[in-house]
Length: 530
Image: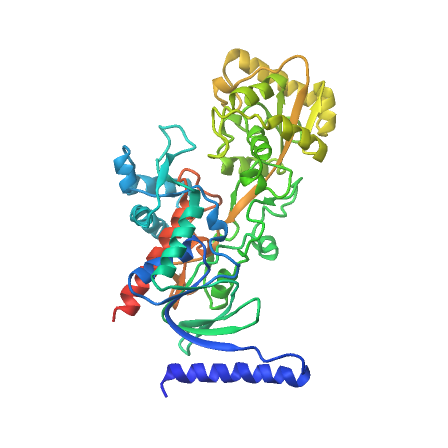
């Protein structure tokens, strides 16, 4: 009997004995059925990075099993609008593009080099062929978009026709068509290692019937569980922003209503001694209306989307003291607004008058809300949103600024002074405080009504995780590779310093797709081609 058969037999016997032991103490409990399997590649998680890894592996002839804890695949990977790609065919066909060196230089400059620079460069350098590969699967693009002016944009954000949900569906179907296996509602419980510490498989258990799968991977195990966005204990442990002293409001999580991203992959890797990096960093996405769940402001009814867009318009933002704290023209730079709000207690109010409101309704916003409410799109559902927001307590309307200030518990004199100051800036067409664009300097009417929208911080990704090398192999605390274990997507740490780099637009989903692809390629090349 070879070593593989021996460890499988011992493990199965041990599990069955444990099950039978349970029957002795509780005769009504049946033994848990167990199935022993072998494959080339095991992937833990069926989001963008897991599906990318899975399709890459099966395309190269590998036998693949993907374990996904939720009833369907994709998870939060269904929500991005597009992904980062550098040097793609689509870019070359639609105008100029930046080089890998230019994009990488901007990335490490943003993070002050407090990142795993080698891995960041690897992901950027391979992002172009990843996007080309996605296109080869049958995905089309609806353009390369940006939230920045042309002189600042890197032009890397490829928006998918149908969003990333179309990518998820295509990857999944292509995996099945090429013989890959996907087990949904089957979370991986733990990793299996041999006596040298090499990761050789997993134990997974199906949720709806308790069936256990003991699976050995000839090539390796790829972690793709998406971070720890929905693990409150981990957030409290690692992220200072969550419960920082002086915060006036909570941080909302802008993610799927059903979310399996609870740090499973990170914790399993850490149990084997993996080094963790950047665990305190979040991808802030604010301001958002003080209305749960915030994901509805992203993909819900029009009145909520338009209210969220109104919240970030360049009219007047004040903090709890009734004073400005940010350049309102940069409201679309959501990571910057998150940081500015964190420095001001995590709370802001967006103030505007009736004329400003009417402009949004009849002509559309001055600045977009991502690609969800765009410039020139009439916000005809805004009156409905204001009416509902007033009833629910996150929108306010008053005939005078004094009354409005009392409603939002801001010093009336401070608010009136701030409004008057911005009025002088509008007359001068210059903002000497925060450099708001001249075309965004508006003078308030001397008569009401006036409106206020309450905004608080939200986040959509955790950015910390396991340290990896250029092949996406997990790195131990002593700097050595954990053999057989690969980490991808938001389970990777060290790609961001303290915040998400919005200038590298679409990097989270782009890095997920690319890291999954790279991990699978390395396994096939080095472990399965012999």
